[in-house]
Image 1 (spheres, helix red, strand yellow):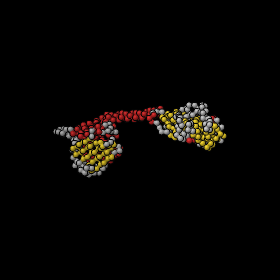
Image 2 (image 1 turned 135 degrees about the horizontal axis):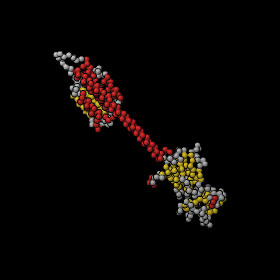
Image 3 (image 1 turned 90 degrees about the vertical axis):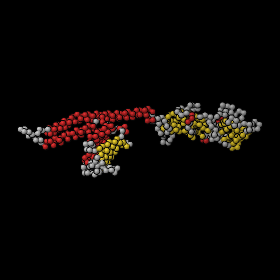
Amino acid sequence: MATLLVRPDGPVWAGTYAGLIRYDPAQQRMAVFGPSAGLTEPEMNRNSAYTDPRTRALLFGGVGGAFEVAPTTMGQTENDRLQPMRLLVTAVGEARSAENGRSDGALRPLRGGEAVPALWLGARSTDYVEIRLALTDLLTPDFTHYAYRLRPAHDGANSLPAWQPTTRRLVLQGLAAGDYTVEIRAETSTGQAAANLVQVPLRVARIWWQHPLTWVLTSTLLMGLTYGFFWLQNRRARREARLRDELAANLHDEVGGLLTKISLMAEVLQQTDDDLPEPGVGAPVVAPDPALHHLAGRLLLNSRAAVQALRDVVWSIDSRADSVQSLLDRIADHLDQTAPVAGLAHTFEADSPAHFQALRPLVRKQLYLIFKEAVTNAVRHGKGATTLQVRLVRDGSFFILEITDDGRAVVSPSRTGLGLRSMTARAKAINGTLHTGPRADGKAGFEVRLRVRG
């Protein structure tokens, strides 16, 4: 500011290096006069203002000479009326980032009164939009304070974002996809705000994978693939179940029937040898053949063992036996058939079938065969054993199988032979942990303990 002229009965006048300013305290309005008001050279000199006491005219000295201002006529024309400051958008642009960071050739100037168009921001991080701003009737535009905020289209008035400072060149980049309204305000360095608030519609494009339709199609595809995967798995399981049932039926009907016939023939052969008539008077003497009798007995014993082994194989591959209840019934039946014959009192403790989860066929098969081998070892090698205890319970997601006898805890060479190696291999096949040896409770006897995930 070069000079200041304060009048007690009128507005305040100031001479600046860019023209004259008139400020009306009553209306809190300011007007700027430059070449359009008759100032051929708007730069005023320092301390060069004077009021004529006779005419009350205002005199200002400047680079272009002395200028007389008539307060009674000044401001009567349309151009000289006191106008509130307005915030204008002078240019807008949509561009992709260049090496120099500018949007050369992309800016579109806006004429006075032209509405600000809606802007579109690309989805790539290098895309940006630019808005050029200006404030009217201000001598020092470099000291203007601009601020903006982005209002999402779906948010209400209760969740307005905070104002962010900016310059007269507002650049927006890297925004989340969606629709916004860019609100811009301005004020002078002294805090005088512009009379208007600029609002610019802005749409930020979505990357193809951010589009809702893409998510719907992707979700549908994933659901279809998941359904197809499980459908194929179920189809494969059903096919395997049919094959297992068919194999079990064929073994039972064909091989089982043949072994049963062999067993019956061996039994008839043995009975025939036992029922030979006693030699009498005048009758020929027919003596039984000891070797044939022994062979018939062994044939009968082996054929019955083969029938029992075949039944175990059929049960292990039959899909209709894939249940905990089937396993419990099979264990109980085998104990009832084996322990009393060996003179062992037996007990069987098991959780309710409802406490178990579904058994995988391989786990069911190996559990039963390990149990059967352990019982066989107890019957054959449990020296002095009188009791046999079997326990099958669940511990979290694991099954615990324990077979315990009260015989002498002496590990004979036979106990470390094929039977224990077979149980170890079966436990390894189902990722189980097998312990064999003296009882863990310190009592006399032998213990087999299997821990496997169901």
